[in-house]
Amino acid sequence: MTDAGDLASVKDADRLIAIIGDEDTVTGFLLTGIGDRTRPTDPTYLVVRRDTSDATIAEAFEHFTRQRKDVGMVLITQNIANRIRSNIEGYTGRVPAVIEIPSKDQVYDPRQDTLMQRVQRLLGIRDR
Image 1 (cartoon, rainbow, N blue to C red):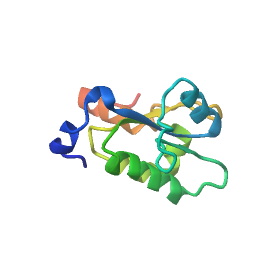
Image 2: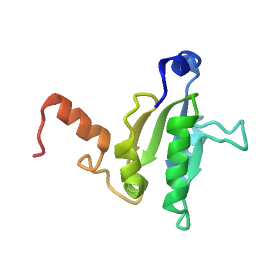
Image 3: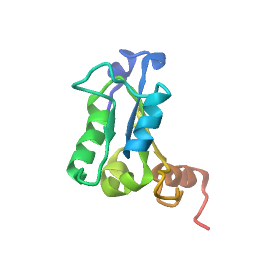
């Protein structure tokens, strides 16, 4: 988890958004200016293809959430988040925020979204 000293070293306005998703989703975000391509050896995105292993996805997730101090948000498509669900559920940090988004291949299901589950618990909302 990131400590307060690390958070103070990066201004909120300078934080980046990391993306983990299929090629179309990542490309769409990159075309809108979201995602950092200035460091070719350490981009803030991972394009997940059919042959991408769960270990590679988990490694990128851990890198964006625990090692990169300049990332303020991680967007991950829900179908890919399901592949590393234990990593996502084990992440308790506030920064970066982990946001699950729909993919073109799967409808978003808020019951699978870890963040939505935490919000519902905080608000005392039970599954319907």
